[in-house]
Length: 416
Image 1 (tube, rainbow, N blue to C red):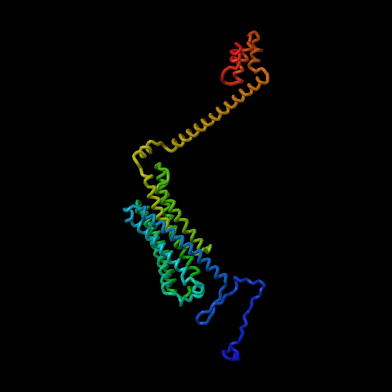
Image 2: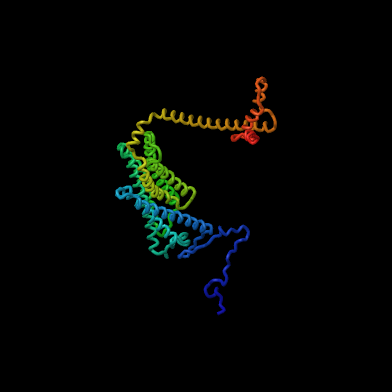
């Protein structure tokens, strides 16, 4: 029993482990060894684990926000949209977009909460102990992303087709150009999805993923920007013509233009955030933003459509209106008249204030025993004319005392 482990198993009793120096020791860069089932090891640092967990939290929050927004928009669409408009292709594809956003978000949330997102499975790509249901859910989430990509492109094609319906020659050229760009982006997205699904338990090639992911994200964002830019240009021309006809206020065309500009800007920003700022999960917001903004724009346009309709009274009012130059001159003349009235009112107020100050000064001079200037001028100018002291006193007592009974008359009455 006293035999040592070296004699029995061929291993020493004690193992010498290297102790890192306390000088310049960084626990975040401290290597952590992991052992594969075949005996080989894999080393990573604590900083890599922290970065992976932070990326998981950020991405899961993004998908959670997408689920909540899609549920709210879907409920509003089902409650507000008229029965006749529910049979249109645009409404059907908008519903599919929202459903795919919800299902994809739920599957990705389950992925981040499941065993596939564990530290060992993520860093070693060893999925021997992972249930098949978790692997299948991950594959279905990639399929949902692909379906969302396809339905989003179809919805954008329908938008462009509707806004160019009155110009068939330009419609086919624009649809051909935009459709080709969308087809290239969709094909690249499908190729990347097939490559990821075929990997299963094998790690991807860094030489492929280094350029494949940014390229696919850029193609998807570029296709959305092209569709939205074409749509916005057409809506801008329509709004300009509408303003020329005399319509004012926010109508259905203005609401569609605002939503189109949002679809034009947001995907590009999310693509930049994903590829250059390294915000994980931001690229998924490019398709989700389009899926959310398209039904919102339709609801907004339908809600303000009644305020932009032409009526007989409005047509007559537009006919009575003169050219723009005359209307501008009349408006300037009316504004100048208003300003002159304001200045007149200010002048009257200043004049009344000056008169009130003069009256107060005259009353102060009588109380001090001084002769008012008008009486003094009258005495010097016409000395032959007798002036009764009682009359002068009676006249200026009214100035001092203001309106009311004459106190001197009351005094004479009491004397009588």
